[in-house]
Length: 71
Picture 1 (spheres, rainbow, N blue to C red):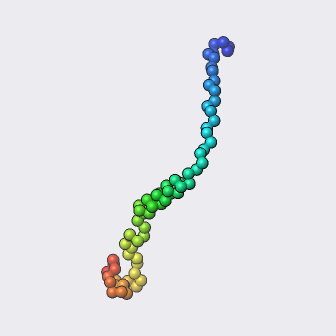
Picture 2 (tube, rainbow, N blue to C red):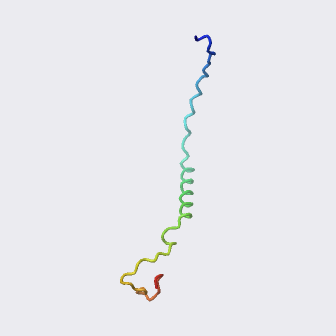
Picture 3 (cartoon, one colour):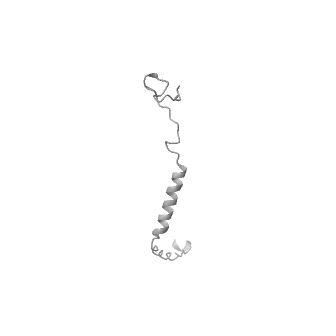
């Protein structure tokens, strides 16, 4: 009973996308360098952390004569 169904019109397909423009290598390099410097600024690393390692033989003084965290 196709006469009871409404007619459906199909819209035309959308136009094809334009090809990408020539890549801007200078801008990409600047953005990459900015991201790298921001990451370095955000990162703390090992140098900013005080690490108290286990002392061999239960020593409380380091060989240099300075007290350690355990001493």
